[in-house]
Image (cartoon, rainbow, N blue to C red; front, side, top):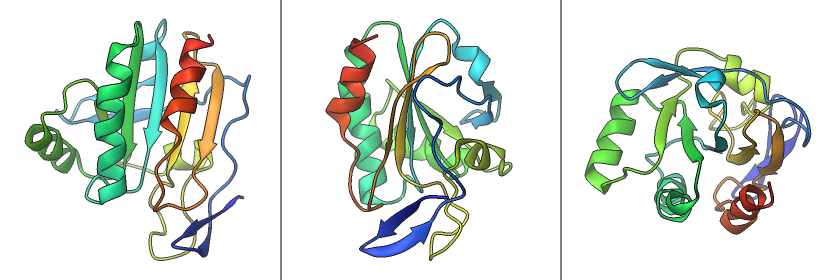
Length: 168
């Protein structure tokens, strides 16, 4: 369990993020077209998991916009923006914002993703949603960088996650 904050108020999460050097846990998430994607679908590519509570908040939306711009120029890289928002809301947001360089995935169908990655919020007003974090994986699904954002209202360190991609 980790402790993060929401506007300075403590919130507990379901565990700890995967450790650097560990193989990332597999996942099955829902696409905006209601299909499914697993970690195996990205084998051979570097992956940024941009994880957040809801695209309907300013900070979460900004993280999608920022990664859409920043990571789009990095070769052999996929940015997966993951929340428990319904796929319809994710698709609507991307359409309205012109987001085309990231892939939106939803964890709405179950609790496995949040539990396996240790990032479900277990207390506070956003209980059951995913905490804000970034996890970077190499081409073999090995964790090379993690960031659990200390206060949910803050943005992640985009530059650090992008440097982690370039170092591998």
